[in-house]
Image (cartoon, rainbow, N blue to C red; front, side):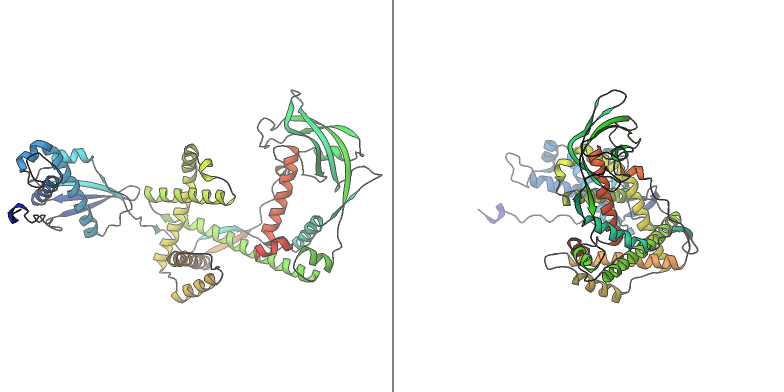
Length: 501
């Protein structure tokens, strides 16, 4: 083969960077920006020639070597429209990059051609000037109408010394011994084993889940639906009684909510709790504290710390809501959708941690529903973050490097070797938390926070809203135990101590 048969590839025509490129911008609603670009005819010709060169290298025609197809033949074979479309695609991409860099625009979304690609293609000619407009989401610019002098009201949380005794009594009940009862009827506080069957008063139909051959019931108010426990009190072992009850309007089983029911209950046997003495031996059995005094001190410290944390959280929550009211910003759809996805992923992670199959649970219908229901929370979270960002900018609040390094060392000491966390992501997360805390403290120091009395506790009837009398009792017990653990940091028992620490 002669040297002439394989010439060196022709060099592509260079695209003149920014040559004659005129860019203007116009803000649009929802933090979108219209970028209008005027491209000179020479730039259009250059893009068209590059498209011809590119297509000639990819098209194979009989009788012609690759890349050596004459333009006239090439245009006849593939059509001028394809060449113009290829040229316009490359032109828009290259011009967009230059325009964003030239105007220092931080794009959040993929730009969209105003009027559509086909409409611009009709106007595109290789030697003629071309103007087109691209629209895209950009970073919002949040501002605050005010940063100082906010006035808010927050619910007060105070330490209640009586909670120490309550938690100790709960622990005593958990460690109590059940002793058979003979010679007397069922009384409040006993544990009764019963057989029962229930039916609806209006139809006589059996209640789904409303029967059992042997179920233990703690005879305390609020354990079951109204009237059920009261119907057991006074029964002796072996006796049967028909009890009338009413399901609460808020009962989760829709076909039972608000309906009257009749239960035939037989007391099989009865037991009472024999509580352990409240002494050092109990403290050692219930916790890792050697004495009752030290157990009391530990619970008191935990409850005080928890009350202080919740009290501070209520004040910060109220201040943050007030700050958001001062926020002026338009939320870009791109950020809202990202926040929605983050919330759904968070929900999926929590479900996976409970051992459930996320792929089976997260059907397309459920995901669509979650997208809709998560949007308000996503927008709220975005507004809060943007309000804090605006506060940091307005008041020039920055995080000291030494504070960040100290916190990173503290966090790193608490991580085991098995926790492989990206150092950059860890640093960013710690920095965000520290800055957020600094901003909220600044806000509290420059605002007026008045405190209001705690809200009244919820009605006790809400506790007895399980799917059946059995589930109501079980759910109520679990709820109380969980509430005790949450309030004190951990139940005063050895099994929970390690997790709490």
